[in-house]
Length: 158
Image (cartoon, rainbow, N blue to C red):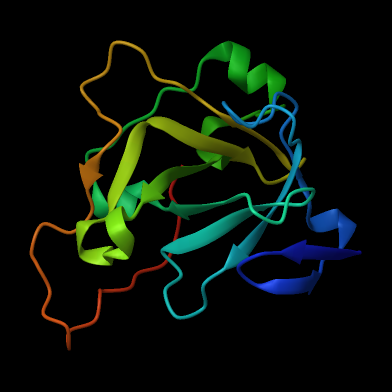
């Protein structure tokens, strides 16, 4: 199937690659189908693109690479809704905000992780309550000069 996107042009997507968000994502409840659009140069990041709206895409990051002490307890309700048999099998992502397009000031929302069951391709944004985390954790502690690249890493621990 062909999907129009404002960032990446027209993409050919296999329908089996779609992720279904039964409740949508907060503020985007009307959008139920998304897909990953990876960033090969930096596998720590990926885009979560809405299939039905070319303008809606979220930059995601594997939070465990930047915040090793980050922990998310998956409530039984979420595990049931996403058919997660073992929480270790779930993928956990944080939504990234890049103020004024300056990657050096990028922040991650650790209060609202995106949880994906890759086996059945179901997803949901979990809103953590009573947590020490915030919606704006600085990704890069040090500033980078214009000629330095942002470090890349791979993997996603759940």
